[in-house]
Image 1 (cartoon, rainbow, N blue to C red):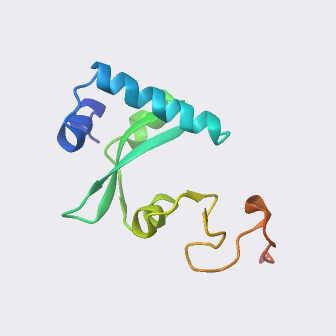
Image 2: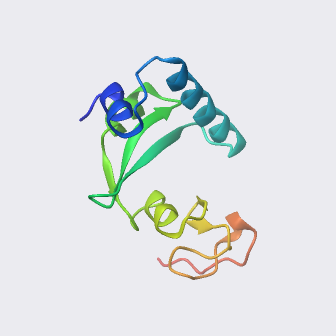
Image 3: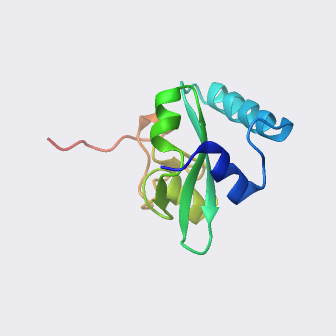
Length: 118
């Protein structure tokens, strides 16, 4: 697992605990609050590998220790489709109110719900 300072420096050129890093942390905290989330991540795109890299998380030291440096392939998980489509994803939904697979979203996005299996 990478240290937070090395990921920030490598991908964003931001020194750990610099004024810029503090602004990034504040922006992530505000975004998490706005979305009603207890935690929030900042992922950066590794274009060469087509992966998202967790650069910073807020809300839980345990999450930061576990996630910083972890990678998500573009198109996978919740963040991957956001990078692929360049649309905000929330609870598996995009701003166009369809899932990453083009299906209608659940009630969480204010549209009709899908039947759940099992």
